[in-house]
Amino acid sequence: MSIETRAVKPPNRLLFLLAVLLPPRFTPERVRYDRRYRTLDKYRFIAGFLAIPLGFYVIFVISPFIQAIFYSFTNWSGGSVADFIGFDNYVKMWNDERFWDSTTTSLTLLLIVPLITLVLGMFFAYMITAGGRHRKGQAISGVAGSSVYKVVYFFPQVLSVAIIAVVWGRVFNTNSGLINGGLDKIGITGPAWLGGEYSLALIAVLTVISWSFVGFYVVLFSAAMGGIPKDIYEAALLDGAGRGTTFFKVTLPLTWDTVRTGWIYMGIQALDSFAIVLVMMPEHALKVTPVFLYERFREGQYGYATAIGVVLLLLSVAFSLTVMRVGNRDRIEY
Image 1: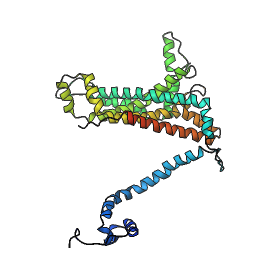
Image 2: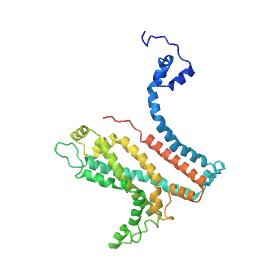
Image 3: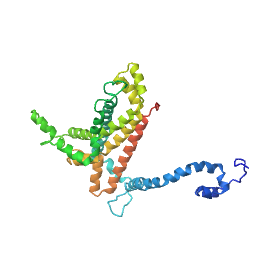
Image 4: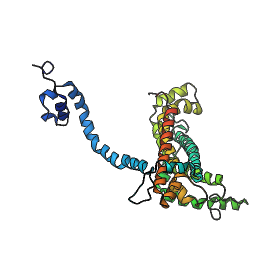
């Protein structure tokens, strides 16, 4: 009698649940021929394969988030005692002008840094991939030496963030910096970039963050553009499309998923910006929320600091969801 026509009594629920945990060779026949078991058996290997990685993820990633959320509702000061105080830390945060000043700076970076970095990354990537003169037998080609440019642009990624902050701190130094030194030679007195006006300090931070990350997006976008079939570009050229039209009508729509992912990642990096601001900027010049959080930890206000961290987490999630929703569009297949 075939398996399909064999009459087997359906297993009870307890036997079925226990049998799912057994290897197939030890599974009772009553369960093995059950339709529900055959459906679950397809996913059992995948679930078993992912169990250990997911376990580590829960322990080392999810668990600290949960602990931080708990401690944000306490007056924990680093000891073994943490009394529950409800929303007092969040009320304190709401009335703290220093928190709002730092958050305003972080939100400004969140809005401006991804825009500058992604635009520069897209421009350089397009020039490397399709911005050169048309070569014989090629619909598009990059500028001469494009492979070298990729290495040059990507170079900041191999440097430590602390090193980048120290070097650029020297560049923006008021008295002996490279920028003001060059201005002095042409008779212009350079401003105090890092210790003067808020706007100048913000421009300095914007410059450093964008410089340090633009190379990553050049490589990322170049890879995405390299995956576009050349036939599409050839068709656009036959229709008389110029470089601008080709970019906005062909390249950008076909790489939009990569751009959106980069937008989210760069926004999170802009919200962080901890090491660059802490190392490069004088203490009184500019504050971002992660630095403000660090100072509260240094003062022993651990409960208050974790509440600030929870707000940063919510800002990151809100930004990511907004970009995913606003930037959502029909996927173009090619």
